[in-house]
Amino acid sequence: MLLLIPAGLSAQRFTGGLMAGLSASQVDGDSYAGFDKVGLQGGVFVYTLFTENFGAQMEIKYTGKGARKKTNDEDPAVYKLALHYIDLPLMVFYRAKSKYIFEAGLVPAYLFEAVGEDSGGKLPQEYMTEFKKFDLSWLIGFRYQVNKNISAGMRYSYSLISINEYPYTPPYYTWIGNLFGYNIGDYNNYLTFGIYYQFP
Image (cartoon, rainbow, N blue to C red; front, side, top):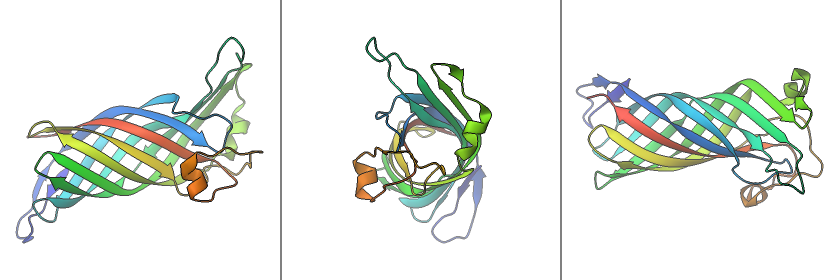
């Protein structure tokens, strides 16, 4: 659904919107750095215009997150973590010069499946129970309006709360984690790239 509310709030118009794209993620707190876990994302969105250029948007979408260790001849050990989330991004946006859209907000998320793999194969499911079902991230993003119905963009998100209960030792954090003073737990750290289609 796409909800448009003019500044005077005198009328409402409902339309639909779909989005799809890719994610590139890592888990801050484990010992592997880099956005090496590639996943999919896709869902629907709805937004409200408060003024001609300023509004709010909500989405319901699937996002694949997790971590993946790079392998090479010197270090062939395998580690993969796939975290499957339903995300509910809530954000405000500002449209500049009709083409450039700047976004910021929060992403409540529900983890419905976690799958791990190492050099010995798929990890037992009991190892995955350490991951919390609820995550909350912040996001910032940018989109470009390609035409009247299509826009494309990129977002960066980072968890505000730890996604698991297991304290890895020693933890490794990127500069974002260090900036927030994290010293225990794991956090989703990910980029998303999406195409947004608004129904005519």
